[in-house]
Image 1 (tube, rainbow, N blue to C red):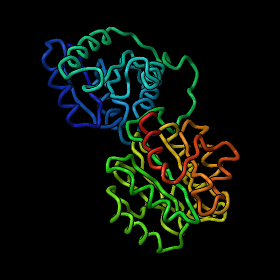
Image 2 (tube, helix red, strand yellow; image 1 turned 45 degrees about the horizontal axis):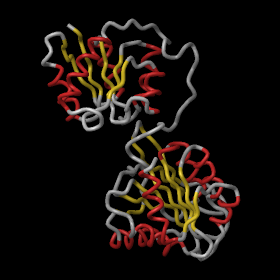
Image 3 (cartoon, rainbow, N blue to C red; image 1 turned 90 degrees about the vertical axis):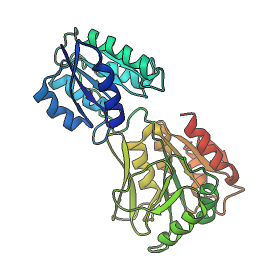
Image 4 (tube, rainbow, N blue to C red; image 1 turned 135 degrees about the vertical axis):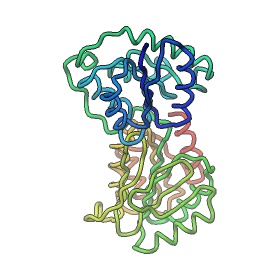
Length: 341
């Protein structure tokens, strides 16, 4: 018997995989886990022969877990994810980290039936693999990654100042309800941001709220940084959330677009799209450049449609903006960029 442990945060996927694998007399599903931390304990107690592993999971992503596993407890691993079409970047990362095989979930390259049959074949082959510690790492430590190369959840980050209330309103009211999660910094005094978020929530098909510490960044929701506090993007596994905290002003501002953009560059990387809109000064220009250097796509509002062409001008002058658009075209550009990432 080949003992298999299934690691996936979706209860439905765990159930489907268990049912399909149970049909083969040579395979026994000894357990399942919704995240790498629970999987770690079950690996020790259940001693599976083969592990199936998702990439997008809470608390720790699958690629990071795979690298740790291959270093300390080498085990044949088949990565099963919607992010792993053969030849894709995430598939290559998984193989480089030590996976013996990668395959797509149903709906990507397989029907449920085809996937189940293919997974059975891959498990039987993987069970014959002989691994040693650090095989996947070739005695070198991989660079530390704070952002996944790719996730199904993308991030849109928007920064604005003078004239930004109207600009942000125009952008958000043109976005559909299924738009990826949005984080916004608009320079406003304390208490004003709650009213602004409430007004936007009435006008938009997306949910808009003043951000609170720990709020998840999810599709269909826009989070507005509260006045007088900084808002930063953070990541737990493949899930994004915001940290709201006090601190000194940055670029003379609190909240600061620069602080938010730098955190988006660090934790979302190429999974982000950034927009810098009308505003006085240079807040966010360097942060947008860092985002672009980390693989994000970026847009700046053009001079003619700006109330004050300060922040976009600075971003454009340093090469931070991939494209320049009038305010009326920013929403479409954001959607196009998200869909082509």
